[in-house]
Image 1 (tube, helix red, strand yellow):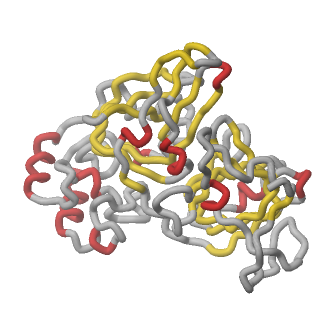
Image 2 (cartoon, rainbow, N blue to C red):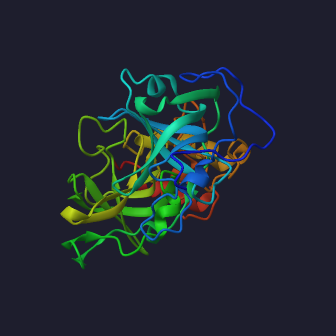
Image 3 (cartoon, rainbow, N blue to C red):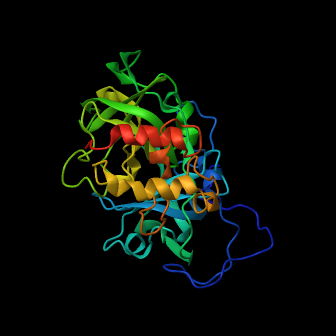
Length: 344
C-alpha cells in the first residue's frame, strides 16, 4: 500500500495499444472502480488514497464543466454499490473531458486517487504522465438504483466533539452509493438555501429527509436552482448521482443528491418534463400503459432509465405516470393523472 504507483497482477491479457497520453507498452491489469472505492474506513477514505493507479473505468454517465472539469463514471458490473467515481481533468485545455461523451466506456492510466472533501476522486494531473482510452461509444447508462431517502439521510444540527456546532450526517452508510446513479421517490421540497454553498434543498418523504442540489444540472444554469425546485413542489421521483461534502472545520458533513438534467425532477404526470401537466402528456401515459416498449427496458417500468431524454428513449418517463408506485401503469394511475391535469 505504500507503493506510489499501484498495479494489480496480470490476468492474461493486455490493453489495445492505441492510448492517448501514454506510450504503447504492456501494462498490468488495472483496478476496477469497485476496488478503488470499496473501503471499511469509518470516514469513507479509499485504501488507495494518495496513490497513482490505473483504472478499468466504466461508462461516462455525466459531465460537469465547473472550475475543474470532471466526468462521473460508473461501472455497470457493480450495481449494488462502490461502482461510481468522479474523474477530474487538471490539464488545460482539458482534452480528456472534451473527448469523453456520455455513454462512452473510458479507461485511465496513472491517475492520482484523492479524497476531496469527502468524495473519492481520480485526478488527471500532468506530474504523473496520465493517460486515458475511450474503448467504445453508445453504451446505455447503468440503471438508476431506487433507494429510500433514509439511505442518504439529511444531516442533523449538532455539536461535533472536535469541530463544534454544525450540520453533520449521523453515519456514513451511504458511502457505497457515492457517485452512482439513483432515484428517490415521493418527495416534497420543504426548504432551500441549505449547505456550505447555500445551494442545497431538503426533500421530504414519508420516511425522512435528504438533501439535494442542482449545481451539476445542465438545465439549471445560471440559476442556483432548477425552475421546478420551489418550496412545496412534490415530485414522483428525483434522480441524480450522490456526492458527499465534508468541511468539518466549518461545521459541514452531508450527502447531496445531484440532479443532472430536467428529467431528473419527475413531476407526477408531466410526461414531457415541461413543468405543465396537460393533454400533451397523454401520449406518454398511453405509451407507458400499453407496456410494449416499456417492457423492453431491463427494469420494465419500475424504474425505467427515465433520465434519458425522450428523443433517445421514447418511454423514458414512465416513472412519472406510476402514481401509486406499484410498478405498472394502469387505470388507477389514469384516475390520478386526470386529477392533476391543468397543474403547472
